[in-house]
View 1: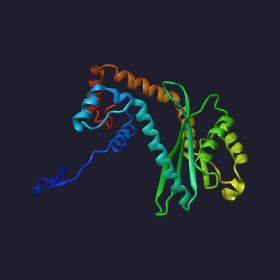
View 2: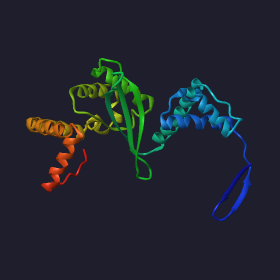
View 3: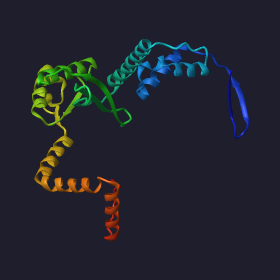
View 4: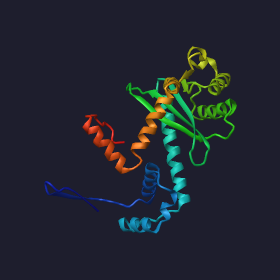
Length: 251
């Protein structure tokens, strides 16, 4: 039995409760996914004792079992999202980017699907986050992206694919167009390749910063000088107050 009530109104009632091991396992896996906890957490003695104090009936699982439960949740959600893609009337736009992890120095591709649902609300789902082996040639990237599109049955529902503005992506998109049926694409595939406006703007800004690079370097050296010691920082702040210069950023 579970006690439910409103402490403010001092009204309580008892409701039936039955322990469900499978439900608890699923909630445990969801917690690990949501907060990115390590799988070995379930083998920590402190966590075992905590779970036992909540409900002695719960049988703690191993890290391999939790890993399996996480994959089950993924497959369940994947099936649900695929059903939404299938039933939704609008096409699906894809954005993809490649980045290198700072510690392992390995390349990963992230693929995000965007669509307008039947209630006219923009929805976005990360549908693939995959390791891409080196070298990151146009052929390798095309193979990874094509596999994702076919795996999610999106080859006939694509609207656009937005990528960074670089020669490798240009070649990748040409290869991808050869693999997809032009009859299922908007305007025969002429609108498929979209260049990321943010990336282009970033390139423009970087070129502009190079023009004033020496000035920026002097400013950085000045900041490094004044923040090198607490005494210098205090002197700088005092001088700024005397000159009535507003310090809008503490750093």
